[in-house]
Image (cartoon, rainbow, N blue to C red; front, top):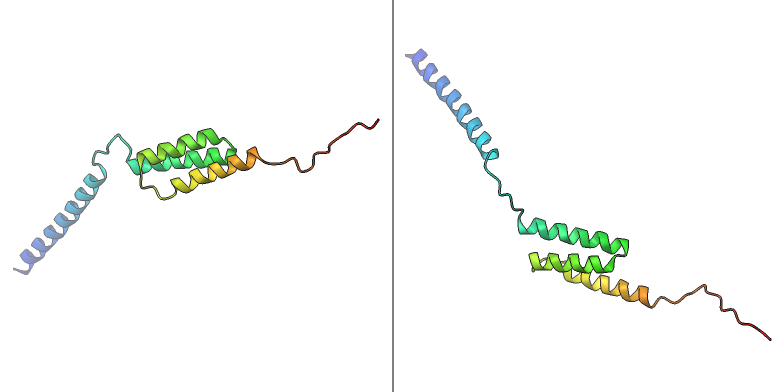
Length: 107
């Protein structure tokens, strides 16, 4: 009788192990959508905008930030980065020539 109980216990344990492994394997093998999630696309556009801003490509940065806003309107930092692009654009356009020497001709 004890050997029968041990045999049932061993079979149930092995069955449980096999069942868990089967579930785990099928959980990773589920089909994944070919379309990336909106958050991922918005993040990629936002990062591209940051790269363009760092490189001084303001038109590309504005386009990328607007694309990120279209994909995910609730993205928390897009409005701030657009304001940063505008501020940097303005700073570049009005930067005075600080070390420029004005040459005048004296008679």
